[in-house]
Amino acid sequence: MLLLIKRLSVPARHVARGTTCLLYSTEAPSSNCAIGFIGLGQMGFNMARHLRAKSKVPFVVYDLNRHAMEQFHAENGKDVGMASSPAELASRASVIVTVLPESAHVKEAYLGESGIIKGIRQGTLCIDSSTIDTSVSVDVSRQIIAAGARAVDAPISGGIMGAKAATLTFMVGSQTDSDFEQARAHLLLMGKNVVHCGDLGAGQAAKICNNLLLAISMIGTAEAMNLGMRLGLDPKVLASIVNTSSGRCWSSDTANPVPDVIATAPSTNNYNDGFKSRLMLKDLGLVSNAAKDSKTPLMLGALAENIYRHLSNDATMAEKDFSVVYQWLAKKP
Ligand code: NAD
Image (cartoon, rainbow, N blue to C red; front, side):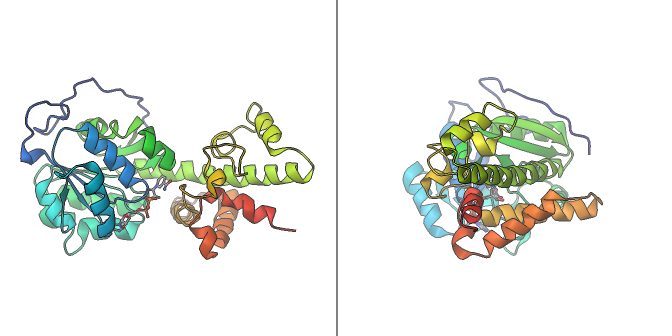
């Protein structure tokens, strides 16, 4: 697949194309310009907070978990709307962002009985930032487009820390450049890099390739740290060497799996507030499907999937950050 990489910046006062919605306008916003946000979980809640604060238009949210909606409403202003269904949210919004766990949730939210498509307006831009199966993503996008609206896939990299700090990277697949341009204006309110990867589904393809490498590099870092410590090395000294040597990677210098090596890493916080092992297993399943479809050999990817399946079968580790693989290795005799 052709990956067109564009690093882009947006003018200070950007008027989104293909819509009458002024993103940075000081004028009273029209109710036609509302942004709808579905999926207020670990990523979505933080992303929605930035989008809500930086876009001067009405904001409406929906989540199956009523408590998440109420918490968002309480923390982000009494004028935040709480929809009763994705269809109702769609009837009130001209831009919709979804951040949901898996393919089935995205299908339900868009195509279900009271899904987005049931209430969608002509021309509405749907931005799906969930990491899901590429073929499901393309199918859902095509159905949105057939209903007279627009769709882009825009999965995320940068984790919860990136969502909190609005430093995420978005990988975008779009049918047209103007859809990408409008999505970019919104995504830059929640992140700092927006990359156009190609046609519909290309964002998902880029995301799963990144996470394949991430899983392998995290297991590799955990294995190297565990060996070094058993050989008597201080983990901070070992990490500082790796981080200035050829073994350097994000799994070592930002999210080191050994507690107390990096103060802000999930490992130091008992592996909480990170990217859950069960979500990494989900992504490795997407990798495996894509590899089968494209007849691509996976050696380390298949091994990584087995390791994360093992972790996900343990109820405690499944909910912990995927760097918990270090703890699993360290306990082995
Ligand atoms: P999460 O489980 O914390 O949150 C998902 C939210 O979606 C929950 O609030 C849930 O109630 C809601 N939800 C589920 N089904 C719904 C439906 N049909 N309608 C409305 N709401 C529904 O998940 P997360 O960690 O925020 O991850 C979301 C997506 O982002 C996943 O695809 C994940 O792979 C991806 N991602 C996560 C991270 C991370 O570090 N957590 C990093 C990059 C990408």
